[in-house]
Image (cartoon, rainbow, N blue to C red; front, side):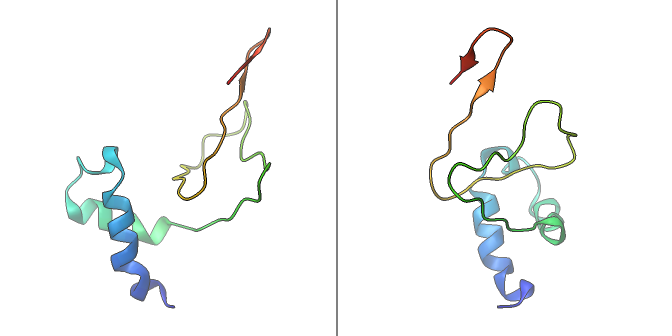
Amino acid sequence: MSRSAKRPELLRQLSSITFLRALPPEEVQSLIPFLEPFHFPAGTRMMQKGDPGDSLLLLKGAPFRLIWKTDQTPFR
C-alpha cells in the first residue's frame, strides 16, 4: 500500500494522540512525510540515557515497559 493510501489511517492514529490534538489539522498532516514505522521485538532497548534526542517515538500496539535507572536503583 502506498504512503498516500495510508494517509487517512495515519491521520486517524495521530488524532488519537492527546498532545497532537492541540495542533491545527494542517500541522498534523505536515508530520506525515517524517513518519517512519518500526517494529521492535519484545525485549528490545529502544533508547537509553545519553542517546541524542533526535527522534520522537509514538508507540502503538502492545504494552511496553519503561525502566529508568538512577545511580542507586531502577525506577519502574
